[in-house]
Length: 350
Image 1: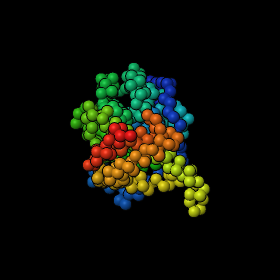
Image 2: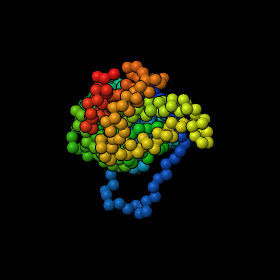
Image 3: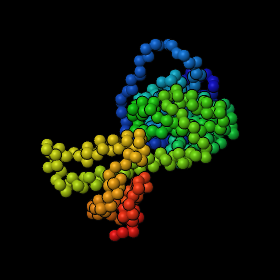
Image 4: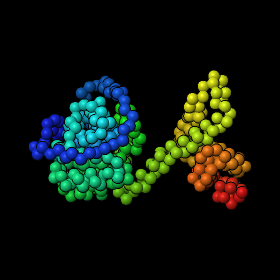
């Protein structure tokens, strides 16, 4: 791995591709992340890794967090593609020493090029880099798309780049907290060979994460698992909040608590229960299941379905009740469910 050049200045070609890399406006914050105090500054039992000049395309939530983490590890984020107002603000607040340049200039000056754009935009960005002529052989090019391995980087590896796939299994909100969360995150690492895996793992470890090898052929399955566990959890909890809000409103929100404080009451009720359930299933697996399905109580489940169908958004093919029935049927797979319950959940009983 090469040593980093000093950041700053334009590349000799003066390349400055003007194509926009837009990203949505996310929650912004001026919060800063305190660096941990090293009790033995200047000492280490590990060899010092090479410092790299990093380029980021573009300064969205993930790219900014990883850039900040790499800088904390001693690398230099020399230049960034940041077209939107939100991206430019992130750079100013969290990567203040980095220059905002066009794509060609960022590519030309980078030893490590981090491609952090939406999955749908990644192929186009890769083709644009390949066509720009700015990529130097030996450049490490890493993308952060969960569903792709290194095959998608073929137009760049064919030009001498070292391709890596580094996907942090974490959700990002666009604040400095994202960088702190990387220290608790696993990264899906995919590379073409052992050398690439070693480099990818070193970068992840420097950012404080844990590298996990995922084969090229399994990236889609890996991504599906994360989407099902994280994204669909949001849909599930949102449905529970909607149903609980309906119950609270029917009872009279202002009278539901002794102090009349009904703001976000559904969330307050669910938070400790959902958090405890999440911790339990991560520790115990399916054995953590409780409630009427775990007990085989088909009568209670039937009443639940009837109540859910009666609220707004509860009925219909894609309503909350149908979601409940589908998830309850999946939960029943982990139990010795009685036939009456299975018949109900499979629609064989009225």
